[in-house]
Image (spheres, rainbow, N blue to C red):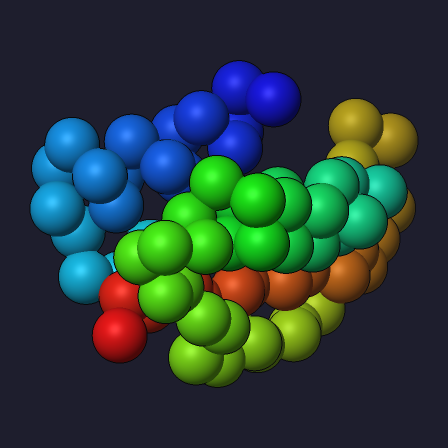
Length: 80
C-alpha cells in the first residue's frame, strides 16, 4: 500500500505527468499490482494509463563471485 500511496501522491500532490514503477526479480508482480491498483482504483478520475512497459535482464556478481541474471521491469504511467 505504501507504493500505491507514493504513486497517487506523485500524480495528485506533485502534479507529475509521468511516473515510472521499477522492480527486479520476485518483486515484478508487486510492481504490476501497484501500477494497476493505482490507476484503476485511486486515479480513475485522473485518467492515468500505462504508456510503456520495458523488460530487461540485469547481470551482476553475487556474494559467492558467481554471475547472476535477474529480470527487471519498468512500467510508465502517464496522465492524459
